[in-house]
Length: 173
Image 1 (cartoon, rainbow, N blue to C red):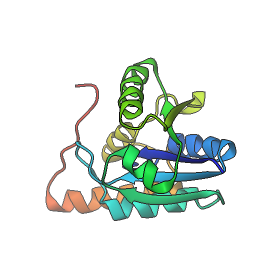
Image 2: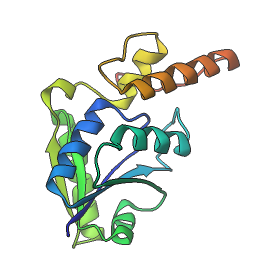
Image 3: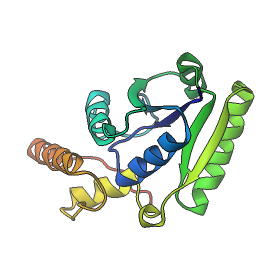
Image 4: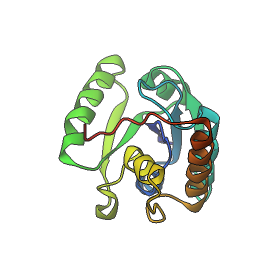
């Protein structure tokens, strides 16, 4: 049985993430969607909130489980018995970063391969950062995220607005 992990922060999960997870689930016997708990970036949602949203978004995939982790990705893969790390590629600039990660992971764990799936064209522009920025500014995210994620974004930005602000780092700057 081939086990793969699909690691990301999923802050929040997008339709692009769901596309990659769905396709990976059709390739591998079991897919563990791994919600990274300690990224070096600002998060909008807590680990628990991200887990809940991700589980809901992927509940239609019977061979997928969703878990959080806070160690090296290759260590988590070893703990799960995974021989493959799945990553998504949207644009050319993703390749350099993913290539570096794959080589680093290969150095740390020679028995674990990285498989990159090219995103579906309709999601090639989509990232969690874009979704957060559009939602924060009141734009429509209906075709970017599942309805439950849209609701979570609206609720979160409403709460933040009441508290007086949010810091979001734009990838364009």
